[in-house]
Structures are given as C-alpha cells and as structure tokens.
Length: 215
Image (tube, rainbow, N blue to C red; front, side, top):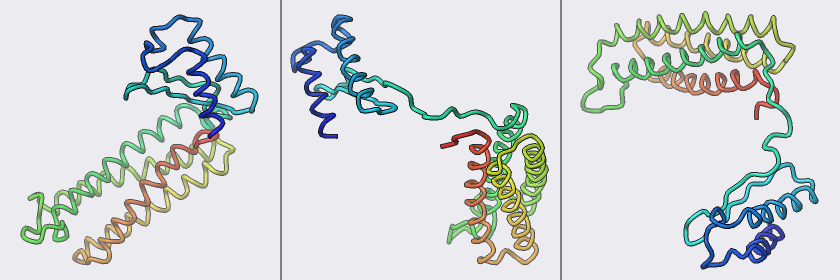
C-alpha cells in the first residue's frame, strides 16, 4: 500500500496535477494516457489482476478508473436460463412470503407493541391463511427449482444449496402450522423468525450458486 501511494504521488507530479491544476478530464489526452500507462505498468509488473484508483483534490474526485479485471473467473450459468429465471421468480415469491409473514406477526399478540397487541389491525386469521397460501406456492416453486437443478446441472454445490432451501422451507412451514394451532407460544414465534432469517440466507445462496464463481 505504501509503495502504491508513492507511485500515485509520482504520477501526480509527473502529469502535472497540482493543487491549482485543472481536473485530469480537462487536460490533454496525452496527460490522461500517461496516467493510465503508469498504472498499467505497475499492475502488470506486479501481476495484480485488477486495480481501481481515485484521485481526490479539494474534496472532489478528479480521476476514477479501473484497470484489469474484476473477476479472475467468469461467472457462467450452471443451469439453463429458464431454470435461472425460475429461481429468480422463486426468490420473488420468497420475498412476498416474508412480507406477509411480517404482517401476520404484526397482527397477532406478539407484534411488539405493549399498549396495542394487534399493531396492524388486520384480522390475524385472514392474513395467516393468505400467508399460508403463498407459502404453498413457494414450496411448489422450490421443489420445481430443485428438480430442475438436479436434472440440468452437474454442480453438487447448486444441488446441495437448493436441498437446503427446501429443508428450511419445510421446517418453517411445520413451525408455522404448529404455532398457529397451539395459540402462538412465544418460543415458536421466535423460532419462526429465526427460520425466516435462515430462509433468506439459503435463498440468496441458492440463486448465487447457480453460477460458477458466485462470490
């Protein structure tokens, strides 16, 4: 880092960017090219895949550019585009499930409002069944994606991730039904909220792991 800072200082001196000089964008093409050449020489000489620089003067960015590549490996799809699209649709339905679940919790005795237990004012039974209907749709989509990934992809990581999505979904459904028919005990409500967080994590991983080099 210190060496690169010295290099940047040398670049500023070599290209004539002083406290009173105009922004690099306003200078000649040769000046900007010399900056690019110096950075590229540093990057290639030290075998650095990618570098991003920013030159700031008086609180304003006067030069910002990336060099090289951001990814060492391509992020190629491991499944057909149709399967990837289905996975994104499933993620969208998952978001709807989470929103409705939040509304259900906010309509029940554990909404978090000490003075007014039913914070939203919706009928808890009605919103709970609406939530359950969307969950059933979500379960069907998760199963469909898992089968599609199993049939079209050779990636063990993608298959394992979607098995995890299905497992968390089924556990969430089981906890949801049990808590509904047992009078919403606080422990089960807390577990259901924890499960919702795990569902978000597994769903994000599920979509990401449909590509190579997901991170």
